[in-house]
Length: 154
Image (cartoon, rainbow, N blue to C red; front, side, top):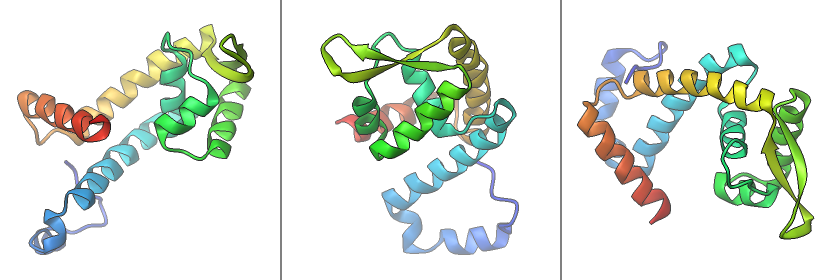
């Protein structure tokens, strides 16, 4: 993983010897921050951020998530989800449709333009992930993802 350009290698080495560097939630947050930062820098050329990408990826799935489901799954406040959907809708990437299971609820569905945007964004995010996890072998990446899924979903 690449260090932040402001961090000196000496400072990283010195701080990596502290007890904080052994705490799983700190390490997970640091890896997440590095990966999200790299992805956000690359997604900016598409007018997106990681949160937009997350909503768009789920909207492009065949599960047709509701706004409430997006909020719970992405661990974001409902008002944040509404703002993200509004921004994606302004780009012509998603639309809200009534949920046939509950007409009071709205599903978020990708448009054809949204699916094309997602394909481009996925390549960008995959490249950022690859760079962020470059210190790991392919097998270690697979193990890392499996462990993250287990920790995230039980």
